[in-house]
Image 1 (tube, rainbow, N blue to C red):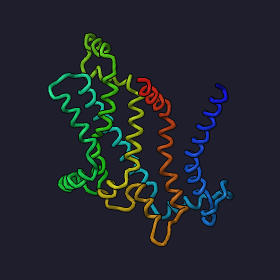
Image 2 (cartoon, one colour; image 1 turned 180 degrees about the vertical axis):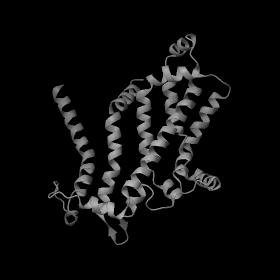
Image 3 (cartoon, rainbow, N blue to C red; image 1 turned 90 degrees about the vertical axis):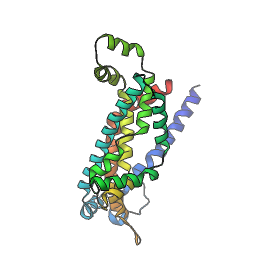
Image 4 (cartoon, helix red, strand yellow; image 1 turned 30 degrees about the vertical axis):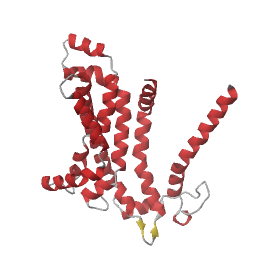
Length: 267
């Protein structure tokens, strides 16, 4: 038994190293001197911040990070709020057409982005939201994945607690925020980071709406790639900066995310 456990831990350790190595190589390359960018040595030496200086000199990295963070935070919070209210309505209330509404959400989840892209773009033109951050955020405020995921969690929520809250005189709004939401913190945290990462990594829709090569950090990365070759040093430095907020968010919410997946696996 001990030998099998040790072998399992060894395999997990090797898989962890294989997953972490690309991240390490990204930051190691960004810290090499410009002349050593293509060096294959595992430990960069001497260390240099020249690649970061060149990245900031070519692009307004701070503005791109701020725009990307604004889009990701507002989009993730908006999707969480819409998904929470929609899931609560479908899980806690019984009304005519509830099953049809659930099937419609499943159907919209299966519709490819390319199908809704042109209607959304035409609507943004009519609303005058083209080339604005609001134009990137508004069409993404409803996530079918978020609604379905939270609905499944709420369907397993003890009905006795909801009945007790109603008998205690609490309104539906009060029951949601004082009884349901505190119990769903792990699921909300896990869903929130998934939505944040998805919005943070989005490339095509911001490129279509903003129509600027330096609007968000993902578009800024493209500026270091050209037909004559890629500028790997500043490219790795910008990519490293783009990855830091996601890593920080995961570290902060790590406990809730692990709890959410563990609880989902036990159901």
